[in-house]
Length: 561
Ligand code: ATP
Ligand code: MG
View (spheres, rainbow, N blue to C red):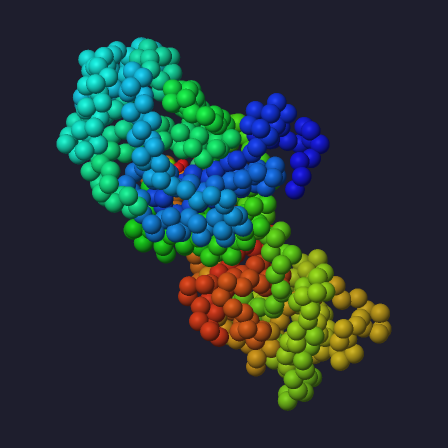
């Protein structure tokens, strides 16, 4: 993708980059990074950040690194570095460099020593509570720690002791010496290093001091030659600190931080903490539960990388926080699946139809299109015989005027086959329709009746003798509230977020699908063969998304609160 006309429909980040390129600020380079902390699985919010960072690099012919921001040893693990790489690749992106903040531990340590030597950092023995108290508030300035004016030598010696493991966890921290009365509280002598005698998944027990996010992040950007360090809005107040570190350390390269609004979706909980609780309490079936907003959940649900990327592009980037309607994501999924999914016929809630004038021993193979408009997807043969199933909602005993499906005395076309007419209805003792008796018009296979009569409706069907069965998991939103209760998300859970259908009857071609394949059940929706629970010739289907936005309609009708 080349950059479009200057200013044409550009977002504010592109405008910044254009201006930088025009002024030669970074020598015309664009180098971004996606910097996850490897402490969990990626979710749709991360996907947004991935699309922004990798997307800008692609758009400007630049580069994008994947950097693991691994400075909290207790929470991080290689399980997550592996899964994050897999998820980024699955979304369709390839990083230029793969780095870890822990690659820079020695360099960052040396930067800290440099700051001590410059009189810009000191070891503080105040307790965490005292540090908080001394920091002041938004209205009141902070006050200096009694340890603030230690000599350089004393600070060097103490920092060396911290590093050597001679001091206890929590006994002291290394702080930047900036300004205890700065209006921006972030600038009131933030911590650079704390003691943590923890095993790190990469550096083992080499270190017992670990750098703080603000110190490590910008300097890692500088080391990697990042030009535009894109993060979310809550880091806006950290930007002066980001710049201060670059200036104080006198890095050769000076990246710039740019903030944009986090992606927030309605009916969705994204915080790692709450997702973890749901996994641990068995509310969902693991981190890849098809109802989860994790990338692996969406993948198992049958969402496609292209759909997620298109969604992220469509919503754009903004400086203001807002909530995006999850219907937009579902819309993007539907649009992509419509293009790529072959069609099959599946009856979800069957009623039997007996075609009384069709020969009992005859089976015809009817030619069905795999896609209504993409000829390249070819055709398949679907068996047709005297007894077929149709969906219960394609029949009405006493239909309203505009019902163009099957009803007593009325005609309908069976997709790819004949026109049939409903002659009589069989019911059980409860008055429940069990079987429809029909006749077919042999002269209507793939053509209109020769006498000119009009038959408007076409319905899908499955030959009873050839039908196969497989469970279908009908997924819905995990939360029934537009804004799930942040205190207790359990109160907002949708009790019907998965309903399993064991009754469906499917055309036999579904047995040829492989795990992960998606199809459209004609007139019903998109379904994917579950990658975890399916076996060869025994698929389990997940509903990806319906054909239409039924949720919006229900809300409109007032059936959902
Ligand atoms: P969470 O706690 O929700 O998992 P996080 O911010 O702790 O998110 P990180 O691993 O630190 O997760 O994030 C990696 C990158 O993804 C950061 O640049 C962060 O700003 C970005 N990111 C995380 N959540 C969102 C979101 N909802 N929208 C856009 N970007 C996000
Ligand atoms: Mg984080």
